[in-house]
Each structure stands twice: as C-alpha cells, then as structure tokens.
Amino acid sequence: MRQRRQKNEINVVPYIDVMLVLLVIFMVTSPMMQSGSIDVPSAGPLATPPMEAAIIEVSKEGKLALKRTVNDKATPLSDFDFQRELKKLIDADQPILVAAHNDLPYQKVIDVLEAARELGVKKISLQTKSGNTGK
Image 1 (cartoon, rainbow, N blue to C red):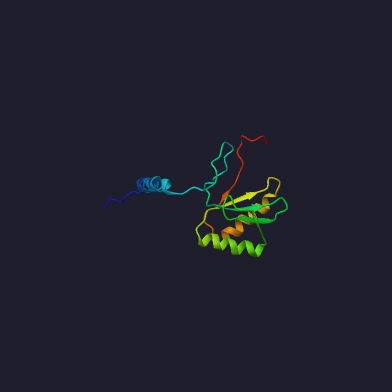
Image 2 (cartoon, rainbow, N blue to C red; image 1 turned 90 degrees about the vertical axis):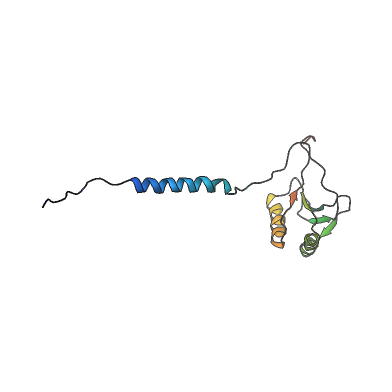
C-alpha cells in the first residue's frame, strides 16, 4: 500500500470568494451611507427671509431678543423667557432664524443653537448679510 504525500500549498480560492463577496457588499452599501453636511451661509446676494420667520437676535453683549415676524419690533428676553417663547415657536411650527452681532463671540451663538436643539428645534438658520455690502 502506497502512502499519500501531503501537499505543501494553501488553497486560496475560498479567500478570494470571501473577498469578492465583501467587495460587492461594500460597493452596494457605500452609496447608501449618509455623509454629514453643513449648510454654510452664502457670501453672495441672499434672498430675503420668509415673512413668517421668527428671528432670535443676539446683541454684541450676548442679550437675547425675539422678533415674531421679520417686520415686528424686537422684544428683549431673559433665558427663561427664551425657552418659553422657543417652545411656542416650535408648537406653531414657525421657521426660526438666529441673527447674531458680527463681534459676538462664536460660543454665544453655539449656546443659543444648543439651547434650541435641546428644546426640540429640528431646523434653524443663521441670518447673514449679503456679500455685496461694503464690509
């Protein structure tokens, strides 16, 4: 009876099959993955905000004020009033804009946006000036 010799080679066909299956899976799933995007304000000519939009104004000193519509007068708000008024705007499903002073520290704007997010605001915009004005 003759003894069998062992082969000294590795069968790579199963590894190639697995790699091809993984490649197909990644090719199919990669277009479905969402990438994060940020809507940055435009520096060119801008459209006017919607008339029904509420505007949260943040002064140079960091004080808050609310305009219920674009043409209304700004009403000063305390932090407690800000939360109450923001909840009313959310319930009314009214668009919200944040108009912050040019010299205001960026952290204050982030604080306002974070407070709005915590209260349940899904969409909020930052108001900017058109790039065609002098400064």
